[in-house]
Image (tube, rainbow, N blue to C red; front, top):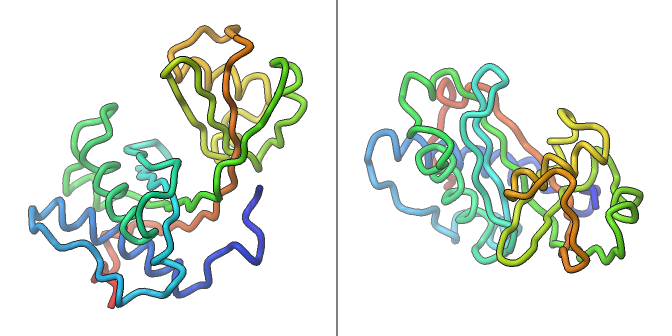
Length: 204
């Protein structure tokens, strides 16, 4: 479910999403309470309900990543919310500081709808995975975890990818249960280096 030419956003929409994410973070840093983007000022593609993740890195190291797996908000609103969550509410990190933001890079991933993967064994799942393409969600008895497709860059082998994902969910690396639920998805990724050094005025 890699993003295809038909599902990829056009250049203006991609730029607007990146500027929306950057503006959301700038607003949080300034405690400005900037309103959510006006849906009337954005292309139709950004008004559709779609899920997203926003990732912040500094010198290649993760500094925040939050997102949604199900489409519950207009895409531009989802990106705004997830940008602020990544900067200020990722439980793995302290809230982002201005001095860090000046050195940070920003990435927005727009998710395709989740596709259920029905497998009878871990081996069958491993054989069905497409390294570099599949984002993966696993769930069992109220616990759930996901890896974006980009994680394949650090974990290129399917078995290692799945083991680390299970550990992220709080399970042992060798855990498997017949009632584990699995979904996959693709992403359309856009990135901006050092967004704090660019104009971050909101869409409009």
